Structures are given as C-alpha cells and as structure tokens.
Image 1 (spheres, rainbow, N blue to C red):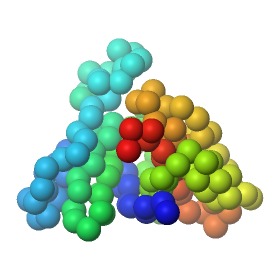
Image 2 (image 1 turned 120 degrees about the vertical axis):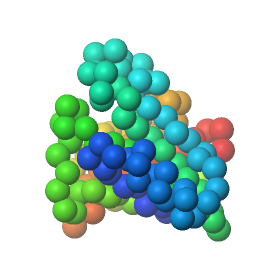
Image 3 (image 1 turned 60 degrees about the horizontal axis):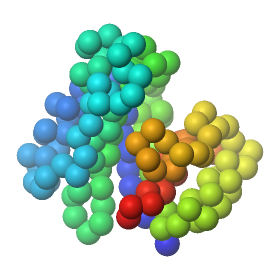
Image 4 (image 1 turned 90 degrees about the horizontal axis):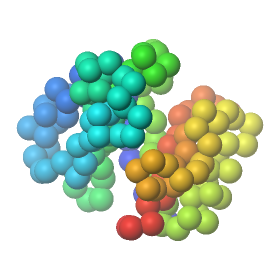
Length: 141
C-alpha cells in the first residue's frame, strides 16, 4: 500500500525551515538537493540555482517531511492553500499509475505522470476538490 507524506512549499527559505525542523525532530536528511544539481539549471539565476529543489527529512515511523523552494521564476506563486501537497509513494508502478489516474478524475494535471529527470516516475495534480497531490514511484525502492 502507498505511503502518504506531507510536501511543503516555501518562498525561498526551505533551507532555513528544514534546519529548524531538523533541530526539533533530529535525524539526518535523506535528500538535500539544490536546483543547480539538476539538468538545465544553467539558465536559472545564481540565486535561484542555490535554492532547494527537494529536501526530505525522515521524522519517525515511516513519515518523511519533504519540501521545495517554490520559485516565482519557475511560475510558482504561493498563496494560502497551495503551500503544501500530499505526496504518495507507491509500492509499484501500476499502483502509482492507478492512484494518479484516480485522483486526477475531474481535476487538473500540471505535471503528467511520467519518468522524471531524477529517475523516478512522478506526476502532480490538483483533484476536483482543490487538493494538490504528488504521486511518485521510485524503481530503486
């Protein structure tokens, strides 16, 4: 069965927030990736390239707190209600596809479910109730 975790969006202060969360919860970062670590980032400003593309902090009992810097230069505009998503980590590719298709019914799909640059299968959608979801399947897990 798929696991559900929270995915937070910050307006440029993800690193500060997650150093704080690490001081509260303890533990080590499972992932701490900057935009400059991704293909195509050469076209971004130096300031944006240094922002956090993805961070993951395990906080116990299989729960992972994750986040990104939602950059306006990439078309993101944070407002109350879109500063988080529910992130689904599926156990199989088939499960991930079924969940994505099911949640997308009547909603919108800003990022279709497909192979992502980091190697996993990934997609983002907003369901018909306005809830944002991220569906991920990583073949190495």
